[in-house]
Amino acid sequence: MHDFNGLGLLSPLSAGLSAAGYTKPTPIQAQALPAALAGRDVLGLAQTGTGKTAAFALPVLQALAKADKRARPHYPRALIMLPTRELALQVGTVFDLLGMQLPFTNAVVHGGVSINPQIKALAAGVDILIATPGRLIDLMDQGKCKLDNVVLFVLDEADRMLDMGFLPAVKKIVAKLPKTGRQTMFFSATMPNDVSGLAGSLLHDHVRVEVTPPATTVERIDQSVIHLDMAQKAPTLVKLLSDPAVETAIIFTRTKHGANKLAAQLAGAGLGADAYHANKSQNARERALDAFRAGKTRALVATDIAARGIDVDLITHVFNYDLPEVADAYVHRIGRTGRAGRAGTAVSLVTPADRPLLKQI
Ligand code: AMP
Image (cartoon, rainbow, N blue to C red; front, side, top):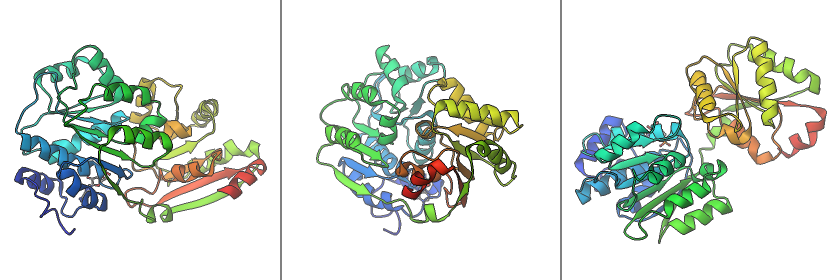
């Protein structure tokens, strides 16, 4: 597919595409759009960076435009669920851009901020609600958001959603969606059993589309290993971080305690670093992320699961302070750098005790 013509997109959406500067569909868009625009359910295996947001945003906007209805107060017509505030805000921007020539309102609701403006927005009527699970449940429990009119449902980053422990919340939300007359699009980077189980329970007669991450991702990453003893780890990392080439780094530790300890050591050495893990409050994590994004701290010390919540594209370095316990996690970790076509560097500190693990990797 060479361009977006021939998909039957309404002209306001073609205008939105021009405004966004998209001229040629990405592979996931080329695969998903014909089915999704025809109203089919879609199961998409794709990672961030593939263009999957537009792959669901265009069909959502087109379906709403064709129905030619507007949302009643408290009753959104499309629901897009994301696991993190950062992802939700990004998706909101895409809807703003692609939908700029359409009259629909969207709202992004997530935790960590006041609920009142969100309640107000819903009371005014929101066509497209972009939400993280926790805050959406609060709004539903308070009777401010009702899902009976949702005709388009998108669950994005499903694997991350489950990793973050949102399955019960997702189930509670899904139980309130209309059972029939709804189009569902489900996206996930990976498809472990719990994720495919959830997909199976949500999708009807779906089309499966899949893009493998571009092979260049890992090829662009310069990987190296430093062999050392336990006691040399912290001083070595301090030295590595002193290199000005390290603009933004994620440092992986095996435990939350280890992350705290290391972040304190780095701060003590005058290197801006914050710990980022599940024992920190959402506010503390958001503050750490904001400082990281603003360039006030150069490094986040994170555990594997928490690192999934770090939505920062331009990470120049990944340091494996501790090697991951499973080899798969290594690829996940180093994939945090080398994004968006840029080069990245991954360095692993390996003690003699880590050797068998290194061999597996
Ligand atoms: P996503 O995977 O949806 O987060 O998109 C990754 C990046 O690709 C975003 O910066 C989008 O703005 C961009 N993008 C998405 N679709 C296209 C397209 N068809 N042409 C050019 N850029 C695109």
